[in-house]
Image 1 (tube, rainbow, N blue to C red):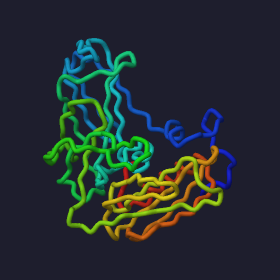
Image 2 (tube, one colour):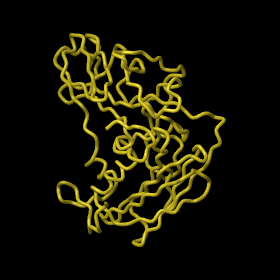
Image 3 (cartoon, rainbow, N blue to C red):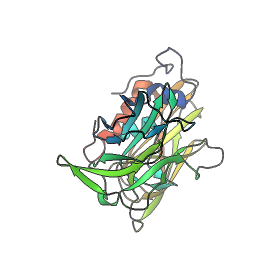
Length: 305
């Protein structure tokens, strides 16, 4: 059960959030950090089972000098809808929906300075349930959206990196998608829904007794897919395009007004072109995290925890 009215949302330092970016910075995901010797072959295994193989002499600094001393590998795995929201790596590519089979962020550093790759390194991402077309997965790379409306801030977007379908390999009875990383960045395995499927333009509007929010966001989670969409914002309205018609989903709208958080959560039996109205109520930071967990809870397949 969500908590009752709280006059202000506060960070761990006791100050109200001024914008949603403050909230995400405070509750963001922490990467796994592993120290390796760049002169030797190293294999890193993430908590979800991602395998990264780093051959010797694969890393250089930003001036292209070889790195010979201990370095840190940063690995962030995103496999649940809660993690997609907290990392803000929503599952669209140029406003086209993606079913994501896992996404990871990989970076190397030495003395807090980023490093570069001079050799491609193999990465294996485990295959997961809930993907409509597991054999149709392709590689996508983190980028910036070019389809946002005028006035919107830069938004993360997935850019197609490889037209070929990713090969599937087996290790210890489990299936993995194999690709080679050329640059440190966000990478993910994704597949677009069939072009023959009927599509809808989903619109939503929030109703808030306290008035217009200072900063707001609407996210749409498709229950039968590993897909979470950040909707286009325009005042109190939000819109998303190219969504499958007549599929169940959950809509979460949340935001801030003078440091106080508001949120509304709505179940959608079937996606359609009709306007969805969501009533907001005051919440605190922990309530928002509960809503994010609800996106996984309401998915019609097993989610990793």
